Length: 247
Image (cartoon, rainbow, N blue to C red; front, side, top):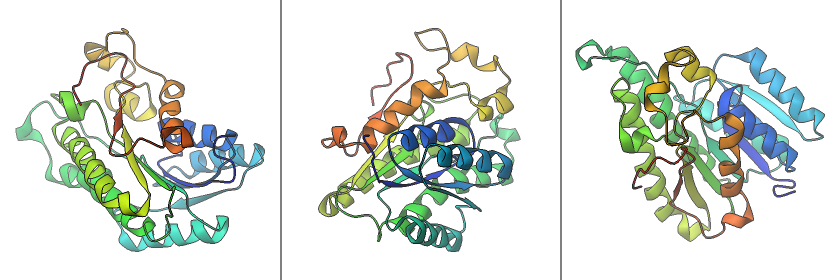
């Protein structure tokens, strides 16, 4: 058990990559708190699966763009599990647009609030509770390095996450907290299927000629959370099927 008795808070773990990471971490001995935005049924299902694995789990509904909610979520996690060891900032949203002139201001602001501003607010709330040996893992994307012609604002937030990860890693060194990120390439998730359709991203297939599964992405998070990654901070792992991103 690589994460035995660790306390973990994961955003967006009601589905997709977050869900698979939550279940993998539970199998490795961690207790899991899940922040979800609206899919209560999905969050409850993941929670029950975690409990069936013999670990503790709670679900917390709200918006990470709300600093009060962030603070309360951290406090509830610590109250339930006694501590916070690992924070995984995974929640995100996207609104594709083929023309910058058609980008809706409301969608731009929602994307930034969800993907980077909320991430910073939740991490700020978590930091007083993280101790030496603690870990923060952020979800960025290959689009931060390669761009995406239909996801201008989304790609911009993912670039901001890379910079945030590297900068916070420098600041967190004195506390002994590691800060890293994972930048998946095309992945078959509910979000991408809802946004583009099942096969819509085939034009950006990586060298392995297929989109990744969520199960293939989750081990990158486990590695960064484990003691095996003791020399990793300020780094980004790239499970992207072989695309060269020079980052």
